[in-house]
Length: 479
Image 1 (cartoon, rainbow, N blue to C red):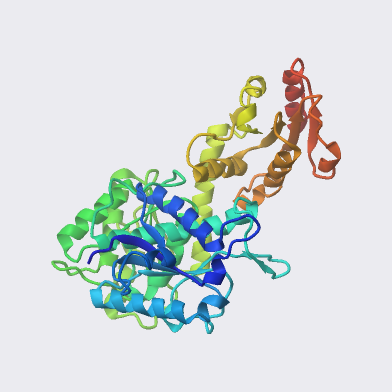
Image 2: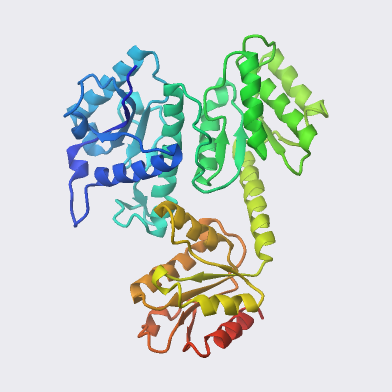
């Protein structure tokens, strides 16, 4: 199979019409997907729009690894789009490798009945803007707004990781080194499940990836016990947490073993718990409360987990509704991250929000903050665009006090940063904000009226007294 194209994007021409000085929606989508996949893969992927593909290869669509369908009312009314979809499925089926190769992206909401039958069972990626209060649906025009950060980009992260998984399986290669973790966070081993929980596992996997975790295993587990043990133990070695979902199905049994893959993964994880201790490695085990169709062997396996002290080593075992388990999982992960952030900042951190053009001017401010006994969080200015944005979001989650510095930037820049502070709770922070301020020089021309009723202090200072003003401001916020 010659899969020279990594991602082929099919869409209705109407969905890529340019307007308002911007490129078409699908062209923008391709640009951002290229950016994300490049970061995940560590190399530039070959992504083509169908219009580009038409000019260079066969009509069978048999040299594309994955297909992304941009769903909209215009897509489902396009005979050409539906024909392309069917052609790709036929080529994938003929190759014998047709698992997880098609992805559906919603440019607009569509009911299940409106979607092509081939796509109805797939989990989609919603890339439109939905107003939770009015129910109004809009297309994104500002791809770097707070709303886009929580919806468009998080779904783009999901899609990039899922395409990566498929490319890895199709090309039959080991990951080159380690898949790049965009958000520089820890590895979680999400154990493979029986067939009855595969959809639930995929949902949890995407949620973990959305929060920036590396999730392993990132390729299909081997079918023989020797290779399976080697791969699972390797992946577990990098993980600080493993999650095991156990339902009614016992799971596949690899060659050379009398135990299922589900059972074996749990045993290997328990062995690591005994070896390194629960401070370094913990396990969450969820057992479905509905086991009506479980075999005798599966029931025996579950009973053993509940009563075997070794199997329970370092584990929290829950037999609750799945949504309750997911809430517990979120709390455990977020609380661990928040505790880490608290340890790093001592509960006293100031996010000094400023632009690159003012980086020299803020050095006396940084010094004044540090002399007052605070850790200074600052934006990043070097690196990939998404890395910079994520650093900003991490700072928004963790600061105690925020100071926006207006030097050479305009009022619009300041308003955008004030909006980010207002939206900080939406980025996952839980602790209260002690204080927010805009700091500017005496002659900045800042429109002070624009920031009234924002629970925000506006402080004007000249370079000679800026250190004293900063010290007084922090004392005020912490009283």
